[in-house]
Image (cartoon, rainbow, N blue to C red; front, side, top):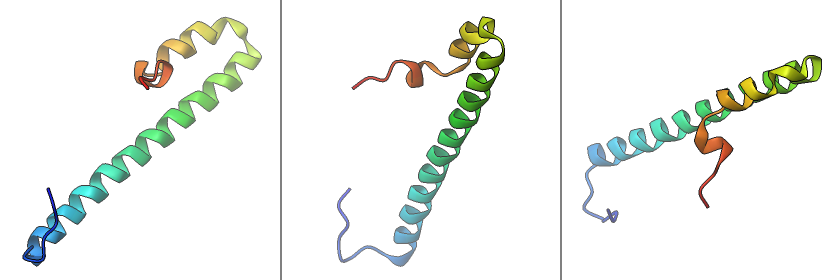
Amino acid sequence: MAVSATMSLAKGFVQLAAGLSVGLAGLAAGFAIGIVGDAGVRETAQQPKLFVGMVRTLPPSFRFPAF
C-alpha cells in the first residue's frame, strides 16, 4: 500500500501501531530463541547427552532457514 498525501492521521497511527506490534513481536521472538539457545549450550557443555533435546527444542525455521 502506497502512502499518499491524502492519508488521514488516524490511518497513519494505525499503520504505525501495526508496524510497532510486528517489530516488537519479532524482537521478543529473537530474545526467546537466544535465551533457549544459551541455556541449551550451557547444559550441553555440562552433559553432552542433552544435545539432541536442545536441537529439537529450537523451532524448525531457526534450524533450517529458507534463503
